[in-house]
Image 1: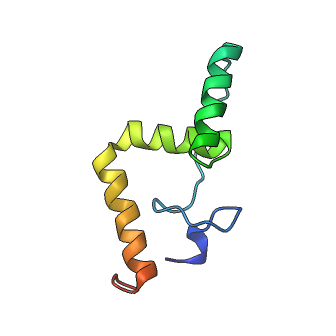
Image 2 (image 1 turned 90 degrees about the horizontal axis):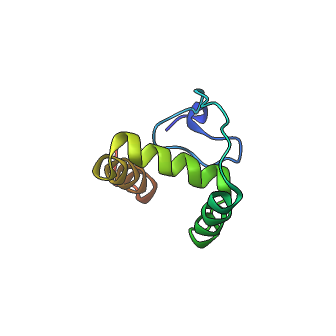
Length: 81
């Protein structure tokens, strides 16, 4: 993993550098409240939660699990450097 794969907060993203943007959109207050609650329960801020939600929806649960498993292997010293 390279320094270019680090997010602003120093946490690497298994997909690499985050450069693409999705336009802002409005939702009803109730929807925002539910998403904020789910984000808190996941230990994430709303932006990170929405990013993970979009990633899983776009790439599929199994691919995302595989990407995170590969990252864990690298951190644990079992993957490629």
